[in-house]
Image (cartoon, rainbow, N blue to C red; front, side, top):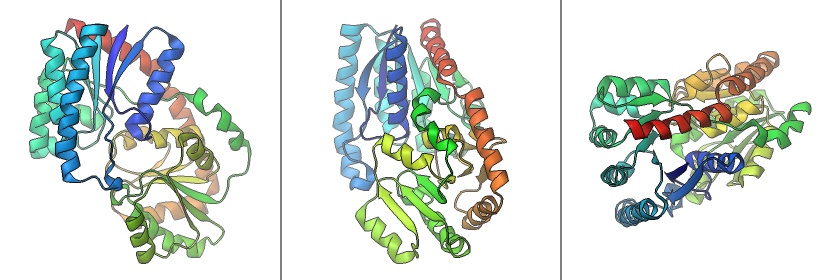
Length: 362
């Protein structure tokens, strides 16, 4: 089976790019699916100074190049399906172009929603939602990665063929880090992600100002890329006592740091299906994260879910776990068990294959 995969390809590493890496690596081992990739990763990220010009003009040129690439793949490789991942916003213009191209050529398409804003924008009937509905109409099947998104699409775009499939995880990929589970954890709270406002970094540093006074033996470790100007702003605004800003790390290096932590925290304003949460679950870390995207599904019964942009709730929840190590340990074990039960790549990959095959009959 040949699949044209339209997705960001690492480096740089990020949520969808990590999914791409995992999927292609697994497929190579299995040998029954061949991916032909079309890379949609922007050359510049927002924190690298990505301007509106970059987002509109540069990405517009990239969109036309990607259409040419898709036509070339269809002509030369004759793929069984096209699988397009999307983070929404202006990228939906590209998605419509590529989905229309696949449809004209008679190639089934899977449209994979990788962000968590659908319930809000569908309810408000925004311009972005109207573009997405057009993309849905061109796709053979739409994948939602969380239940709220699936329900919103069924309610507000009932003519769409949509299904829920969570992101997969390959536990074997973390075997080399399992030794850390047998060691004593460092007294560290760990954040892993982009150091930007919408990841809740300001609420985290605000909560830490209070926590650090009551828990002088603990450290806050922040792993992820940052803009120098924003980092300076954070250090000017907050007392960053015992805060380590590690900056961007290679995936393996980030996992080493994550595996030795005591609590994982991700207070984002918006998410899709964050791979960092899956990795923390695999490493049996207690997790505190916000009620956005797929996170409530992921942490049902095995983590602490709090409202976004709520520093008080973040502070209270972190304080509770720091003061209740047995509860924290129990949550970590339950998170690992839920990961093994719900998100194993063997099962999820078979669901993808079923859709790629099913698309030909819709």
